[in-house]
Length: 97
Image (cartoon, rainbow, N blue to C red; front, side, top):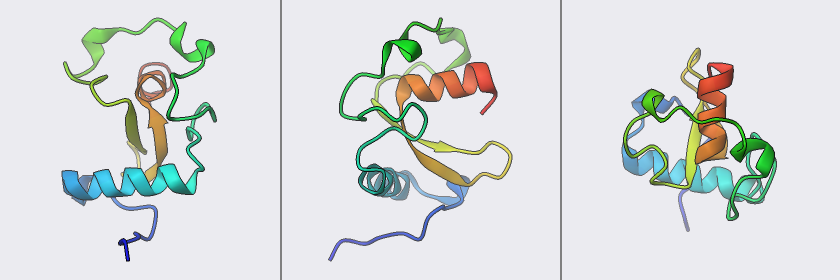
């Protein structure tokens, strides 16, 4: 039986391996819909996301290397859901999340 986590988790205490498993669990729990834009995580994000300017200087070099990210609150540190990488960028750049 595959291990399931009690969500949310505290992002900063989780190892990269645990974050990966939690991200996968969120994907399944969300029926593969992005927590932010609500579009399929297995596809590219919608144009209302991709058309927003993306300031690459604000993000780590490999930020877009993984198409699905584990979104967490920068206030509480708790995970919120799985998002497209570009949705994560919009959350960070435009909403401070």
